[in-house]
Structure formats: C-alpha cells, structure tokens
Image (cartoon, rainbow, N blue to C red; front, top):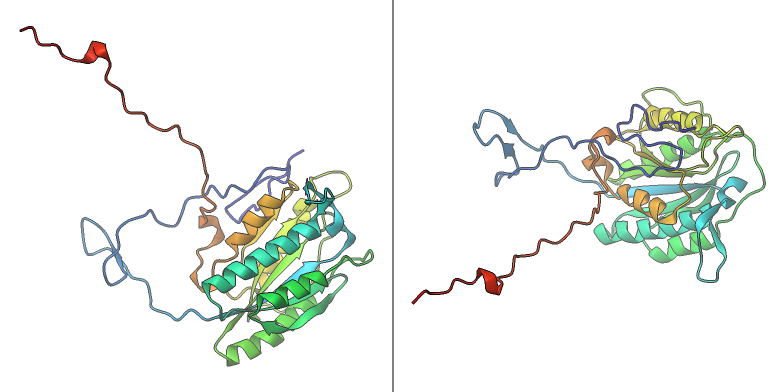
Amino acid sequence: MEVTMMEGRGVGVGVGGRENNNNSKSKRDGGGGDDDGSISDSNSNSNRYALKAMRMNSEDIIICVDVDPQCLVEMKATATNGRPLTRLDSIKQSILLFVNSKLTVNPDHRFAFATLSNSVSWLRKEFSSEIESAIAAMRGLSAAPSSGQPDLTNLFRLATHEAKKSRSQGRILRVILFYCRSSVRPHHQWPLNHKLFTLDVMYLHDKPGPDNCPQEVYDTLVEALEHVSEYEGYILESGQGLTRVVLRQVLILLSHPQQRCIQEYLDIPKSLTKKAPQVEPMATDDSIPVSSQ
C-alpha cells in the first residue's frame, strides 16, 4: 500500500519508499536580469519584477534530534567497519555536513543542539560558530529509553525565548527537527500568530504498515510547521533507508529562510540523468570526394 505524502505542500512523494524528486515547477522560468537586479519582460518594460532590497540576517539554528529508540532502525548501508548504519548515524553525518556547509557560506551562523524524547532537553545550549562544537555535540548524542507521545510545546517555548535574544542582536532563529517515529504523532499547545522563528523538519520513517501511520505523523508535522513558522518552513522526508537520500534532503535546508520560495515551487535537487554524448560523424573513404580529372 502506498500513501502519498506532502499533500498540499507541492512536492509530494510516497511513503512507499520512493525518493522525493521535487518535480514541481519553479516560480518563474529562467531569464536575463537587468543590471539593477530586476527582471523585465523581453517584449515590454511595463511588466517588471523588482527584488526588494533587504538585509539577510545571520542565523541562530537549534538542531533538535528525536532520540526515541526508533532512531536506531538500521539503514541500507554499512560503516567502514561493517557495522550497519542506523538512522541516528545518518542524522549525525547529515548534521555535520550541514553545519560545515552552512559555515562555509557564512561563518557568522551559530548552532546549538537539543534532543527530543517525551519533551525537549538541551544537548549543547551555547550557540557556537565552531565546527568542533558540533562534533562534540554529535559524540554526546545517543538514543534514549522508550518514550511516549512527544510534546513539542517546550521546544517552541525554548525557541521563542532564544529567538527574542537573537532578534536583539540583529539575527533570526531557526529550528531544524529530525523526527524518527513512524507510529507516534507529536502534539503541542501553541497560540496562533505567535511566530518568532522558522521550523524545518526532516522526517525519517518506515513504510506504511498495520503497526504504523507515517502519513498521519507527517500531516501532524506539517500542521506544526505551518503553525509556528515566521518564514517559509520546509518539511522533507525519507522512507527508503538510504543515507545518501537523507544527506541530499538535508542540504536543501541550507537555503536561508529569508530567501526561500514556498516549498511547492522547489525544483531541487536537479535530476542527474545521464545523457549519451553526441558523436561527430567521421569521414570515411566512401564519403571523400574524388576528382574525375
């Protein structure tokens, strides 16, 4: 049985194991830009689109990892020592790749780390721009005993508190939640129109079955994201058990919240379809003109 995910988000994939291809069209087709940064119609200057100048704030990013025992589900990959990789292993790899890439773009971004069991707990509270801080946090990250339904309220409360401090420093705050449960929907109690941060979600799940409900969990995560996000929040998912898919999805989250299109217009990652090289026809003896003289 296949259940279509991301309904209403515009980049739907099935939880039956297919990869998120993000095949939706972009907001506008490519074209040349004017020197002033605006994009104009090639036939008329009456239809112009101008990008409003704005400052891109550096980010404070709280990365929160679900440490329920389901984070220990094995992926379809093994480590160099032959040990099967788990979801938690893949999450750690993707976080380090994300932090390193984000700091390469702007070394002023800062990161803190938390875990989600029944509720949220700090793993590394102090925001830091040092990759060594992220490495140390990942070394201290491990699964927790079995827990009940997770409450996201404290995560949102914590993020709002930190967002106020970030704003006072001319920064913005984002939360990236890695969620691993296929049968337990999170819940929260949060007021409407109280949006001081942006929430992104990376959802790793099992295929649909009689003992789980990943579609319902996904829908709940979408509702939470739209309920609290200041800017456009993205939700990505993988039910294939492939580490490379998780890494590729997480790299989409490198996009700055203040520069994002809405998710239904995402057209990345691009398909890397192999194309047969075009071979120039070679002249043969039969095709060489011969003079009759």
